[in-house]
Amino acid sequence: MRIAIVDESASRAAVIGEGLAALDDCELFVVTERRGLVARIAEIDPDIVLMDLGNPSRDVLEEYFAVSRALARPIAMFVDESDDESIAASIDAGVSSYVVDGLAAHRIRPILDLAVRRFNAFARLQTDLAAAQNKLAERESVDKAKRILMQSRGLAEPEAYAELRRTAMNQGKRIADIADAVVTAHSLMGGS
Amino acid sequence: MPRETGAKADLTIGFLPLVDSALLILAREHGFADAEGLRLALVKDMSWATVLDRLLYGHTDAAHMVAPLAIATTLGRGRPAQPLSVPFVLGLNGNAITMRPELADQLAPAGGLADPAEAGARLKAIVAAGRKLRFGVVHRYSSHNYMLRYWLAACGVRPDHDVEITTVAPPFCADALEAGEVDAICVGEPWNSVAVERGAGRIVLVTAQIWRRGVEKVLALREKVLDERREETEALVRALVRAARHFVDPDHWDENAALLARPEYVGGDAMLIKRAISDRLLLAQGAEPSPFPDFMFQYREAANFPWVSQAEWLYTQMVRWEPPGFDAGDARRAARVFRPDVYRSALTGTAEPLPGASSKVEGSLAGTTVVGTQQGRMTLESNRFFDGGVFDPANLEGYLASLP
Image (tube, rainbow over all chains, first blue to last red; front, side):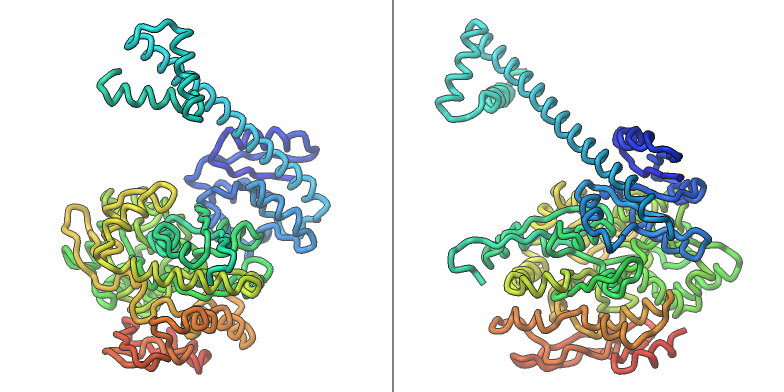
């Protein structure tokens, strides 16, 4: 079976492709480039197209599929009415799927289920990454604030940190928020 | 209606980042929804396909939608049928046809918009001379597609035969013009202006020149959701009417343009957005903005009233351009998508004019006409088609037969 993964995010396409590569009897094609998308899909001649819901080219591709209905291998949004739940799950996960007309549901289902799981896994990765980046940014801002306090008030590092913590506790805020405020105030006052 | 407990009802609404999503944004940001006991959450997407998916699978309760898509979905074109309902029209027109400058210069006089009949005749000559032209529209089931085709066909240029029409996503319209993937686009704002700013295109016509009062975006809900949440839907209609009044008031243009330009909404340049909402477009790079009254038409003359005749006109265009052909049952289902009854019951007792009829002859008003409303009379200005065509909803098949 020929599966095309259309995703402008190359990293997500890789995560999904990696999952689907485990399937027997499937050939994968990853399309991350927007230009020439329709021509590329025509060339691949896929049985299944998986596309992320955020992709602005969905309307373009659906138009192509609508026109291609007149062709030998019509392709349509996979909306199996008998299985609303799995479609809902794929919409939740952020993936749309288009399937060549007449392909048996029992062949499609495992691929869709897998795609949904991979989309969800990617979303979790993104959340973890965002949390990690956030933490890193917070640490940088706390370090900066400490340096400002050490320089402007002649404090030692542990004292500077204690000062930030005390202020945070008094104001019912997070240390990172206080640190941000210190950094902002400092740059407003002409510091660098 | 505000609830007795004071608790707010939550409504989630999908939209695409286009200037005509404005009323939803204004209803949320200026407190009009809040005053009606609603808490709006807006979900921004990048394709109509996704806006529709979210609506059908319950991620959203309502959506900003190209009007023909609501009808196509109800009729089961492109996917299994799911009945949608439209209690409110988010606006009329607001689109333009922008061409590569070299083509535009052959159709339009320097510095101005073209005359639709004249430009059409010139286009016909260009095509007859053997030039292959490709037009981009934003969606198969869009008023852009139908307005463009109406104009071309009325000028003797046969869509799909003499010229190709393809789908281009709005954010990529300027790119597609620049790269020569298309020669012209029919798209909403701010995307014409973006193409103009980049020198990729010149605005040749606005759709208001093709049909002076053409239905554009609508508020769509699943029929079932409208039935289950009728009270909230009516509250939303009232909030949107207030938003519409705010939108057209020149005192608020700067403020609203800045609001719409926020990245979570339409995004982009507030100056370009203001051009659209003030009906003053820059037609070509380096020119001065030129006024075109009613380029966008979001409030006056009960513009938000879902005239059944508008849904029926869209249905005639759908069967005109793609199979299956006319079917009386489909025509009835299409007509039923627009729900003037909901609009009326939402606004009964307010000062908003409520037309007495649910349908009107479209294109019949060359000058101004006075029509009856429940509160008295309302003056309607011209709603003509550029070719003088008249659409009588009492005779859909006759109208179809009369079209070129």
